[in-house]
Structures are given as structure tokens and as C-alpha cells.
Length: 486
Image 1 (cartoon, rainbow, N blue to C red):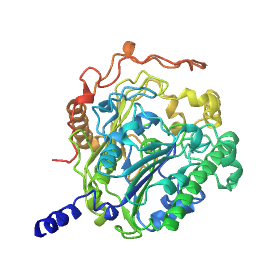
Image 2: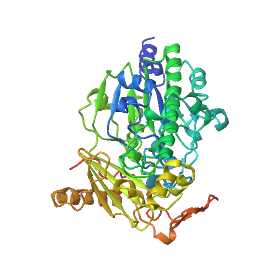
Image 3: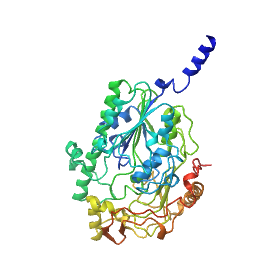
Image 4: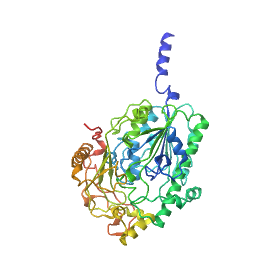
């Protein structure tokens, strides 16, 4: 009898039988949404009451960075906690990620007894089905991607904790009619960023985008209501973020903050104080290790991120000194790298001869069309004309504390020579240690257009060429590169 009691006490302490005490996890991920486009991030006119309420009851992260501003490589990076060139699939629509090599963090949760489900847009660069108990089809997801989110919560087993990957299709182009009809914004609400042309087409385009953001917010509110109804709200950790910046000029697919910084709200009534804010740096690589630590699971060696759980207790703490991001093929060739350190962002363009303007969005985005029209007329200022600059600058350095829109390059300013040289070395170290490479231009995946002919766009399926990390077999490299400033 004594032996039985000892054994029973031991089993009660194991994760699988203590499942009811472990937190649930929900990750809401938007499709093309910039970091400052929620009310809680200071936007005066975009109406996001659901996210704002989560932020008010939890923590806002002001310096959360993506590893790339490109849809499927970003999602693949997040689910593996690996840099895009280390997943084996750093380019858009590139199905090269091997799930048998990479450590998918939902799969680790699933193996530890969590019920794991994915609902909404999938768009990964590889097969992630082994990470989930259930994946709702694209048809079930509906036009917003959120049609089955509440159902997913209802169908989750009540006797075990859950992890949900809820991926919205908002605010990806093209704009969907249901979101627009349900939106409440007007043209008077529109604020045009200084690097876009303030014209009627751009304003109307941004209005449609605002309504899509509101649609994402509304879907989150529906899930929160269901959690409260089930009594599972208090012990559910909620992350709210996006895969890349808004689908507008100089945002999505760029290394500027409007493209590479993500909104990041964490809410957990049972384990996090309300009204918290942190300016500490984190990377989306850190999401997986954080979820795993909160679930009592060791981080796999393949993961390059670090847990930020100590920030949930102390917003002033530091979990990393550097974040790194990369731009690769996204319908057009490119190879740019960025490192964020303190208030500085340093960018290195290894293919400055390649056009930066994303012309595929030029075809279906009024803001792109209007910007290009005004550029041809010579009506743009320096910030607005930046996306057309060719060749591109090989280096850029910005002080974000003084220049949040990143229009004042300091790379040639002698006062910042020491910082420039420091970040050059850090970038080179990261490239070497993580196996990043620069393919020859002739061997890269071809662009879908001619750089001098934006109306000649080829949307047929293209064969991927040489890509970053292929030559070094970077998908097998475990080194994360520099994280802390030593």
C-alpha cells in the first residue's frame, strides 16, 4: 500500500497527469498587419477593442521582431523557431522545410499531452500536419480564415490543455467584401504614412485595410467570449501578432519597422499582471521556447530562439540584445539582412542592383499604383521615392529613438562610425555562424517581372533556384548566432 501511494504521488507530479494545471495556449496571427495598427499601439483611429482589451489586461511588447517580412517563410520560421535560411525554405512558396529535421514546437506540445489544432490560413513551407491533432481545411476557414475558430475551442477536449494556431486571412489582399461591409471606418479616419503618397487611391486603399484589421479584431473577440463561457479564459495564454507588415509600399517585404516589426500582445489572467508594457527586444523565434517553458517542456537543440518568460514577471528584464531579420525571394529577387540593437537598426543589402519595389502588389494595390504614377510625374519626396531607388544602398543605419519612420540614414555620419562598425561585425558573425549565404544573381530564383517593365508579370509557377543557406546545409546548423552583446 505504501509503495502504491508513493507511485501515485509521483505520477500526480508528471506533466501528463497534471495537465489540468498547465496553461492553454492560443496564438492569433494576422496576415499582413503592421505593428502600430492597433489602438493599443497608439493608432488613434483604427478600432480594435478586442485586442485593446487583451493588451489592457496583459502586456504590450514594443520591440517584437519578425525574422522575415514574407508570408510563408515567416510562418515557417515561427513554427520551427528557426531563421528562414535555417529552415531549408527561406523563399515564398518554397516547400523545402523537412519536418523530420526541424523541431515544430506544437508537435512538442502534442507529444506532452496537449491537444493541438490549427484553423485558418496554413501557408507553411513544408508539411506541419504532424504537429497538430486537427487542421481545419481552407474551405472550412472561410474568406476571413476565422470561421471555425470558435468551433475549434468548442471541440477541444475538456480533460487536457490545448494549443491553438489561429491564422487569419485578414488583412491580406485582395480585400474581402464581408470585412468591408462590416467595417466602421471612414475616409476621415485614414492617416497616410509619410513614405506613401497622400492621394485618393491610397486613402481609399488604407480605409479598406483598416476594415480588415477590424475584422481580425472581431474574430479574436469571438474566441475570447467562448473561452469565458467555458471557464477556460483565466488559464489561457494568448499571443496576438502578425506574419509581416501591411501590404503597402515600403511595408510588407521590407526591413523597415513597418514591415519587420510585429504587434505583440500577451494576455494571461492567471499568470500575468494587467497593464504591463515592455520595450525589451524579442524575436518571433522566441515564441516556441516560451510556450514550451510555460508547459514545462525542454527546448530542443534545433530551436534558435530563447524563452522570454522572465519578461512576463519583469518587463524591464533583458532576454536578448540582438534580433536578426532577412529578405529573400518574394515574387522578386532580393537579399537584405537587418540587425536591431538598442535603438539602432542596421541593414545590409547584398544585392543592391535588384529592384526593391514589390511590383506584384503594384498590380493589385491602388496605393502601389498611385505611388508609381506620381513617381513617374516627379511628384514624390525622398521618403516616398525610396522604394524606386536603384541601385539600392548597400548599407543603412537608423536611430529609431529619433527617426521611427527610418528616413534619415546615418551610415555615412561620422558620429555613428563606432556603432556602424560594431553592427557590421555582428551581422557578419551571424551570417557565418548560422550558415547564411548570398547566391549568385544568375542562380537565384528569377523574378516574376522585368525590373524595367512592371506590366510584364509572370504569375506561372516558377522553379526555385539557389537560395540562402543551401550551400552550407544551413537547415542542419543549430547555432543561433549572437544573441547577447558580449
